Each structure stands twice: as structure tokens, then as C-alpha cells.
Image (cartoon, rainbow, N blue to C red; front, side, top):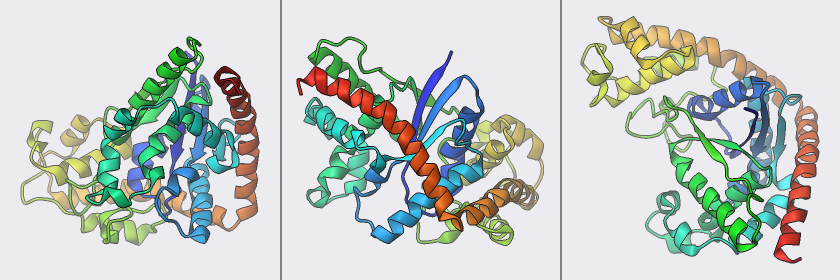
Length: 333
């Protein structure tokens, strides 16, 4: 079955192994399947839900595009663009926000997590950004959306919004209700210093993550210093239930080598952690170093990156403009 796939990545800068294994690696596989039509968006409108330095944001947008390209996403096969260059996203977000219910948004757990205790000081954009995410997806008649655990709730909201819009305007099937594409294993990569915390660029310790721009020595050093426990390598996946660091490192190894967790456990049964870490560092260097070198090379050619975005935005704009015109007609504009 042909799939129309939409996904976006926030240009937060300093993309890391968690971003790669949790999303971008999957994008490359989807891009390489000739049955898929893929649209990959740098969601810069989402980025400004929290305060950004304008010069840093511009740099981060280019770095995200460079990471897509360096990882193997082909702009001849897929559309790569940045969200703010296609005004239909903002227009559709407003119209859909007038269809959405406050009760739905109040249930979004990610807003509660990001806003923290003092949610009165959070921006309206941070509160309502799941509606913009729905607009992103629905403008392209997307049939499938790759989502991690933290975005499942937002996709459910997108489905609810689509169905309510179709009902409100007596237009069955007009907004396509998308299905999730959920990776069964290793979609959530944890910190190298704490197996209970998600790998994040906001962690003050650089040793907690492997950045996609790290060099050979940095990767080896970070894996060597990654937290483990005093027990030997596990005998089965049942042994991992209370060993988050061991589970995370084995999960990373399995994802990078395209193995199941069980196969990885069998491979390292009876061996010590230092031997496993040495092998993990080897496979990570093999996978990440070429990406790191290509990102750095691409960042030296900002015109090329801007041209990719312009071309992608023109292609995305043709699709989105047609859809927003149809939406406006249904609404009565």
C-alpha cells in the first residue's frame, strides 16, 4: 500500500543519538521505500513556542536540514522544507483551533511537563501547538505519521480534530484521519548517565548524550564513561526489568546494528561490560562518524542548504495551498 508520510523535527540544534535512532534513522528507511511519499518538515514555528535567539534559530534550521541530508534522506525522493516558509500551516492552525475543544488540549500531558509548576507564565503557543501539529499533518492528506511515545497523544488529538472538522462541515473523509507508525523497539533513547531520563540536549552534562557532530574520541570516551551497574551482562530480556542503563545501552546497540534485543543479549552473554562497551563504541563510530563529517561539510555551504529548503517549500506550498483553499471554501470564506 502506498503511504503518504509526514513528520517534523524541531530545529533545536545539537541533534543527538536519541534524535537519530528515535526518528531520523526511521525517516531514511521510509525515504528509501519507493511505495512511500514522504514529507519531512523542519518545524521552526513549533520551535518559537519557547524563546529563541533569532541568529541561533537560523543556524539550527540549517543544521537540521544538513542532518537530514547527511543521514541519507534524499531530497529527490522526499520533500524537505521548513514550516514557516509555507503560510498555509499558520492559516490552517487558526481554523482548526476554532474547531478544537479546550478540554482536549487540557488533557495534553506534554504541555503540563514543559510548562512545569508555573503554567500561567507559559506561552499560548506552547499550549496550543498540538493544533499546529495537526494542521501540519492534515494539510498533506497524510496517511501515516511516525511517532514516538511522547507524541502518541498529539496524534490522537489530530485524529479527533480531523473527524470533528469533517462532521462540523458535513464533509466526510475531507480531512484524512492519519494512522500512527510506531517503532516497536528503541524509539526512546535514554541518557548515558541516567537510564530513567530521556537523552536530551538540555542535560547540562555533555557526557549524557552522543551528539551527531561528535568525533571518534568523543564517542569512545562517552561510551566508556556511560553508567552501568555492578552486575554481569544479562542472560535474557527478563534480567533487564530493573536495569535501565544496561537496557538502554543494549537497546542502542541493537538499533544501530538492526538486531533484536534478544540477539544482542545472546551475543554478549557471559562477557563483561567493558568488552560490550568497546564493541558498542565501534559500531557507533562506524555509524555516526560519516554523518558527523557530512554535517560539518554541508554547514559550510549555507546556499546549498537554503536552496534545498526553498525547493522543498515550493513543492510543499503547492500541496498545502490547494488544501487550505478547499478548507476556506468549506468554512465559508
